[in-house]
Image: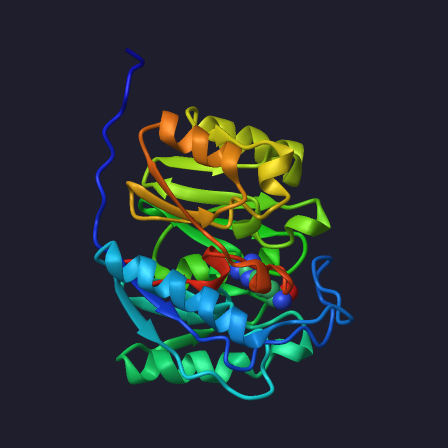
Length: 272
Ligand code: ARG
């Protein structure tokens, strides 16, 4: 009998934005090709299946009103960081997404938060992931290293900076998934050597995923501590999760992958 760790789910609070106006009209990451046709109805169906999956797992899902002309707004994770009762709103790297900040700040204000703005670029939970009582923060492509300290101060949690080096893994949430307070999964080649050493020291029993799983954005996953909702194509990673005592729940988000995002990108988590 292999040793099995028992994993405990906790009820989560997610914020999502429907892909009503989703399109691939510009290319700001290597996954995006504006000549590829996007089926918006299919995107909406796939997104709704993700939303229903969260509901069936017992989680709370709140919605942000999508805005016409902001095709990437479906990637709600980028809207900001919500943790410790505080809210930091995104400052986007590219002008095409800049106006999303106001929409997410308005949602935060309406929900009783004081939306903190950073001076430097921060793309929210695309690059800043809560792991227990600390934040893991990526830089190298979007969020600036200098924003990490601003976010740590605003949220009141320590931050561990990690440098991303492969343009296909341009946000931290494309290269690393937090599975519970002390467990992560990641794709080592997406990080520079000092960051890999830092991850090894912090998470000695981390799951390291293979190329094939990373390249279908398998790490763009959302965990409640037991169930891990992930792109269905990441079969090797799903098997690793099962071995580690988690329950993988595969979902199909092929239309949203055309914009360079998947499960986690579509999900902004409100961390208590
Ligand atoms: N097209 C979007 C961009 O390049 C995708 C964002 C994906 N979001 C994420 N959290 N990784 O900005």
